[in-house]
Length: 151
Image 1 (spheres, rainbow, N blue to C red):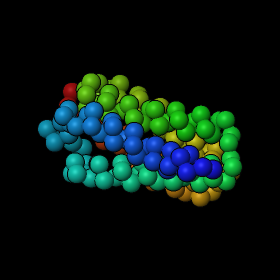
Image 2: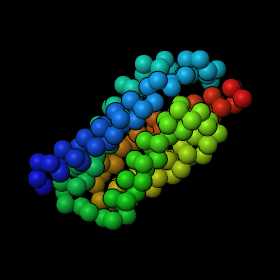
Image 3: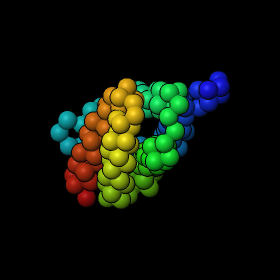
């Protein structure tokens, strides 16, 4: 694997997540919303997502480094990344909180699909992606709670 592919696999999620962060930065209204119990302070989100995007990149890099290239896994990885990157735009920029619930549920579906598939070929990548699933489940709870409390 050449140097540029390594960089691509490792940092694509972090790079794209940064772009999404820039797009939504002027529209984040998190602190002005009624929040459900356990809602963390807003400073936690960029820290957590940066860690999760980095773990996602490392997981995909390890999977690819071992010469795995299963079309279904590769496709599912990019689909879930697409859903992940558009969710905050739907939630914060467009303020379509109910649509964001449906969107994040689709994201969860694709994360679970990715985990099930990648576990078969690379356990390390699977374990690196588990915090992403857990955090997205928590984000789903927050999305639903914010929608209910701010209708």
